[in-house]
Length: 236
Image 1 (cartoon, one colour):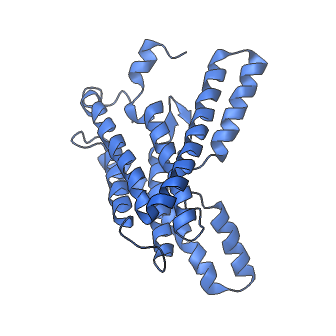
Image 2: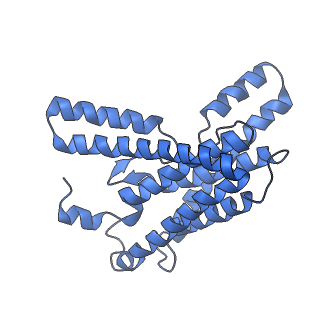
């Protein structure tokens, strides 16, 4: 159980609410890219790496390059997130994670104007970039490592915590397992919402996760004043 002192040290960016909203966005974007942008899962890059290897082995160079681009975009997103953290971490006018969310929002809003078709590969590259920014910037939930744009690691961690809860009869591990499984559930809910929204709204369905991230941006404001009073005590 999280006591009051521990609760006061949990940053809004590490809260379950923010984690759940980001997981909702992650699931939505996977369904959106698959349904409206050419059957591609743009969040995780393992599949792209497998397809890159296959195309290279077949000497289909142009198609290999097609799969290389989102991988590079994902790497670029990680680098940008780390650069923004190093530059803006101790700036209190605007939290560095808010800058990340603002970039995500701008890209998502613009994608809603791009019709499905020839531009789909570039849209998927942009979504890969967005997901990299998000997964690199938001890595903790109540002190637990997690991912908001993919669920394999969450499933592993949640199952591990469940085993420890049963083996050690420890309620803290059980609570941790519930947090991981709840994030997975929200991710699936996001995918379901992405399916129905994409079916109804087409490419403009992406404005729904845009609105969710605007809410996250607003929620992060609640920590800025307290962080200004506690520089050097809590790393956010």
